[in-house]
Image (cartoon, rainbow, N blue to C red):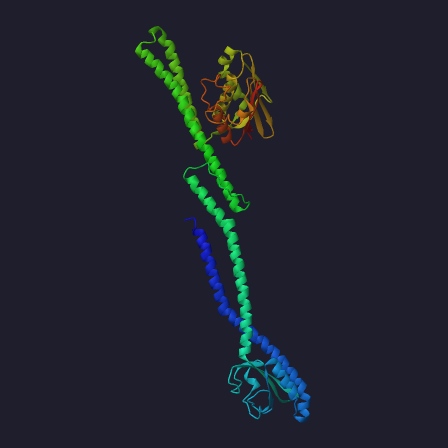
Length: 462
């Protein structure tokens, strides 16, 4: 499966090579022959004009030639030279068997060009490139100089050009092979590694990491998959921890309830003390109820973040109402609220019920960790288009290493376990989910031994 892409590249490369050489063989040979023919004809035509110009003066006066020059030229260029008079009778021929005295049915008007390929009107047995130029003296054409070169020579030149073309094609093919190898090691091989990593993730081996470190798109894909695996691994660990915490938080009160009920059934607890233990059982059932309700709240926030019921309300009035509900608890421990508002009424835009739940959880959390006789400072300040809400206690505080974990569901710091025996560990998770659902953020600052402050923002009502 994973080698199919490499096989496709190899097949594509093979098809490319075959087609390239087929095109060179078919069209390249024609182009080379055409180019060689054009080059030879131009060269011969220039020579024919030169000879005709050189011979014109002597021919016009005495019908005489310079045979030594013509023979020497013919031997150097492998080109046959014929001189025709105005009646197309051969006056001079550089080769044997000589055509001297023979009349050739030559008509320059037969061709639109200055050259032609063939047997030159039956004069030669082999195919020949023939070029002609008139001998003109005093505006009169006394005859023609015709140069003839065997096509075998032209074909040899074309074959040489085609050989060079094949050599260039082979070089391009070899370079493309190197590029294919580079592509294999820079793209295909990393993709195979990424595929293997994806298969490991599919098998549940989320601890596997793909060792591709390039900075191109392949490296970006590898890094993205590694991050995804890390997130999935973290989510898996969180889920396992979540199940363990839920099991623990449900098992403890259920164990207590069962133990007390079994003791009552067996008569271990006398009748006059059963009321006390019934109150304990009711307290444990309330704890289970609160835990279940908190989990349902989180599930609702996860599934319907956009289901908030927005309205404009007075955050100052809401905070005063929430503080009043904790009056009895605060009075027992001599805890008081230190309220600071930038205005007597600050209208914000949000879900009233959810924000009330946020304030209930934050204030309840602050009371749990505040020493008796201390203050809980709550302030609201309007600035720009936001209202900033702060809840600060002066209790034991949170260790620096625990700050990032307090939003985790069911998480409790070691210092809180002795003071928050009835807590579910879901309060701050609910707070964060609600504020996030409003499109805002909540921040926390804490100093061990000096207290903790939570700050969140809400948009002001327009």
